[in-house]
Length: 303
Image (tube, rainbow, N blue to C red; front, side):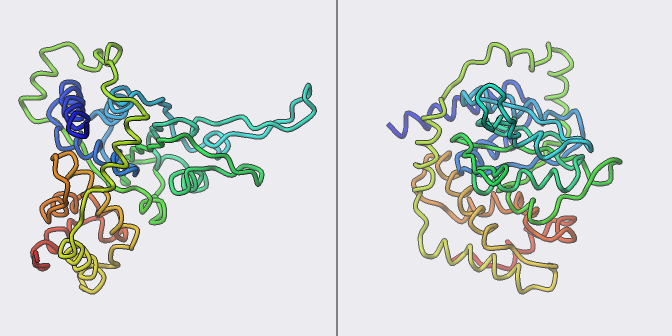
């Protein structure tokens, strides 16, 4: 049964590759983040397919999807919802905001003010929001894909470290290669296929797959290797500050999901090495400007 579902995941990734051309690694990393029950941050220039990726993931997994356009005048209540007095019922009732869905695209998250950015924090971490001292649970599964413009662009606000640490992975799509771009130029816009795209899986199956991915085996030496990587980042002077415990847990969770996508029941050091370069957003702002993953991989021995 597990192999059947893993085969469906392979079909799903293949379908996504037919719409988002030339980005197989980004698609697989996005799927792995979803299987790991985490959230994904995409930092890139406009027009490279960030929104299309979120749409494709939502449709292929059969997830309810909502897009929130972050702007400087957005309010926290515009995201979480509001409590309104019902004249007919003579009582207050909660009206859900767009955060109450299974896949949320937080588009251009760093164009909103820090106060509005923080409205996402509770939902991402606790899978609930609190409005007027009342807690409201978010749907399950719940997956946030946030897009971020480069910080040097005008009209952007820096994301605080506490916000960045909530994202399991941070990726960049980048420009397509020459062959993929030629196909885009010669053929009709592949985004037109979105309307006729049928789900490959459904939300209930996704929850089961998330559970199966979390059970992928991690050996003692593998955990030693991961802890040695984390310890090196906290001790070496090349790092402003090292990886947090949450970052280590995120790295391991996505490595399990990556191994699951590779049809393995155990994590290899290669899985950790593959995922590590996409976790530098967990470091301090100074460290995010350089890729320190190669330093870690070079100086920390594989057991």
